[in-house]
Image (cartoon, rainbow, N blue to C red; front, side, top):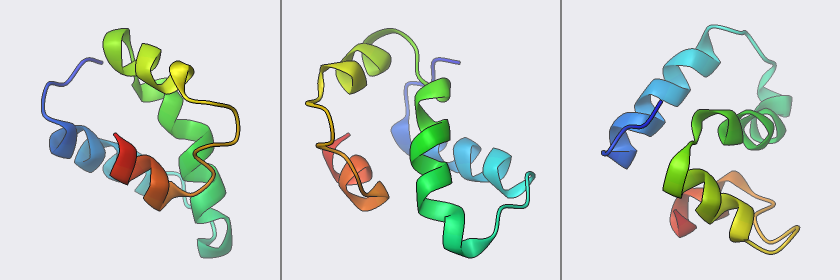
Amino acid sequence: MNIEDPYNQLTTFYELYDTIGIAREDEEATYLKLFPFLLIGKEKIWLQSQPNQSLVKWKMLKENS
C-alpha cells in the first residue's frame, strides 16, 4: 500500500485499527507494532533508518514522519 498523502494513510490506518477492537490501555503499543506493516518503499526505508528505540511514542512517530 503506497499512499502519497500521509494524512490519508493515517486515516486508513486508524480505520483498520478500529476493526480489531484493542483495549484503550494497549492502544499506543499496538499502533507502534502495526504501523510498519502499512509502509513500503521510501516510507519503510525511512522508518528502518531511525535509531533503535528513538520512536517509542505514537506522538513522536507522527511528528517525525
